[in-house]
Length: 164
Image (cartoon, rainbow, N blue to C red; front, top):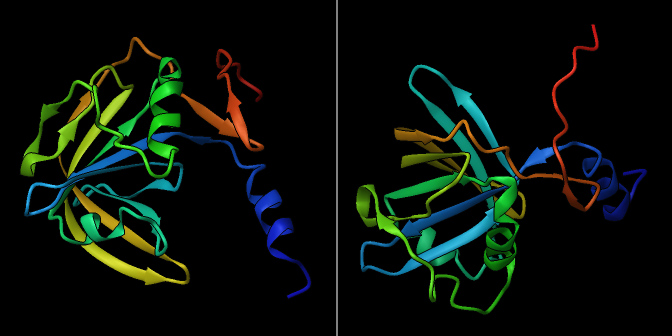
């Protein structure tokens, strides 16, 4: 390689992404959740999405033992949730009001969108596991703007303007 990991990360940070929180419930009832911007659509038929989880994540064992997960596309008012689920070594669900989704997955309210998924496939890829989920139920809230991330920090989505 003619570049190091820092140069690679810097190049990737130029891509603007949305911010998600992924939650799950293992077959034994353990909850886990992480903040992730490694989220993307895969297919419309069947409806598939993907995201990735580092092999060194403390939540890996819970996600590996789960059949379902939920992708919460955060609103710009949910920066605190993004930070909460990005913090290592804390009980991320302590004091957080959730409802129960498919497979017992904890659901967070007031997101821009929420996708409840069954695990379609897990694909090992380098130092991550790619999770492909089949979307089973969606919830959207068109009244909120999404939380976005760019160059290592949160950013504000400005009103759309045509550049053509």
